[in-house]
Image 1 (cartoon, rainbow, N blue to C red):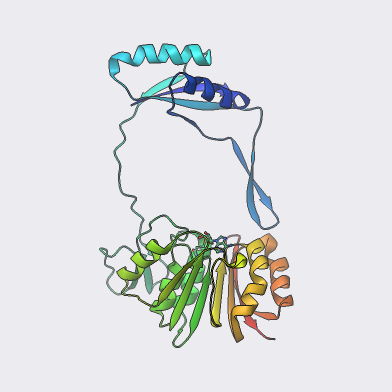
Image 2 (tube, rainbow, N blue to C red):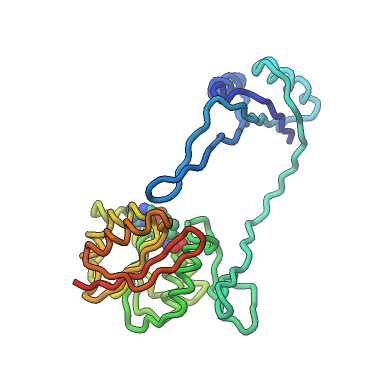
Length: 288
Ligand SMILES: C[S@@+](CC[C@H](N)C(=O)[O-])C[C@H]1O[C@@H](n2cnc3c(N)ncnc32)[C@H](O)[C@@H]1O
C-alpha cells in the first residue's frame, strides 16, 4: 500500500474528504489537531482551528495505476503531496508487557513465569483496565495487601474486571462487577485464566434501573472519575453495609478535595489516600 501526505487547512478537511469520496476514494485519514485541557474533574480536549494538517490518502491498488491515482487526487485536492511512502502492514497480536506491581505480585499472561512471585493471569481484550494506568496499579497494590475472606464486594465501572479478579484472589466471598459496557466476555475469560468462579458480571446503566443489584456489600469500589462518583453516591449508599468501606479512584489531584468533601457529606470518613503522579485514590469508612 502507498500513503500520500497532503498539507491542507483543517477547516477544509471535511469538504476535501467528501470530494475524494465522490471519486470513490475512501481510504483517507488524518490526526485531529487536539489540545489537551484540564477541567474540574480531569482532562478534556479542544480541537484547534486554523491549523494545517496532514491528510493521508491511501492507494491500495495495482502498482501500474499509482501515477494516475496520484494525478486524480492532486486534481481533487488542488495540490501535490509532500511525500509518498510504501507501507506493508502485518498484523501482530498486541503483546502487553508483564506489570510488576510490587516485589510480590505481577500481572501477566498465563504463559509467562516469574519464580518467587505470585501472578494474576491477565490477557486484555480491549476493555478499560489493562493495568497500565496509575489508578489501576495503586488499587491493585492496595487490594493485594488485604484479605477479603467472607466479604462481598461491588466493583462499579469494572472494565476488564481486573480489580474484581484481584479481590477474588484475595479470598472474597462474592464480587459483583458492574459496567455500562458489555464487558462480560472479557471478565469471564480472565476469570477462567485464574480458576475464578465467584465474579458476577452485570451490564447496564444501574442509575437508570437497567441493572438490579440485590443486597449490600462490605466493600464498594468506583474507579470512574469524580463526576461519576458524585452521581453514584446515593446508589452506593443504598448498597453499602453499615461500617462498609468505599474505595474511590480516578480522581485528579485538583478535584480531590472537593470529591472528598462530597463523599464525607454522605456519611463517610477518609481513612487513607494513595497518589501516583496526579492520580488519587481514597479509602473511606461508612460512619453513619
Ligand atoms: C477507568 S475504567 C476503570 C476500569 C477498572 N475498574 C480499573 O480500575 O482499571 C472506568 C470504567 O467505568 C465504566 N463506566 C463509565 N460510566 C459508567 C456507569 N455510569 N456505570 C457503570 N460503569 C461505567 C467504563 O465503561 C469503564 O469500563
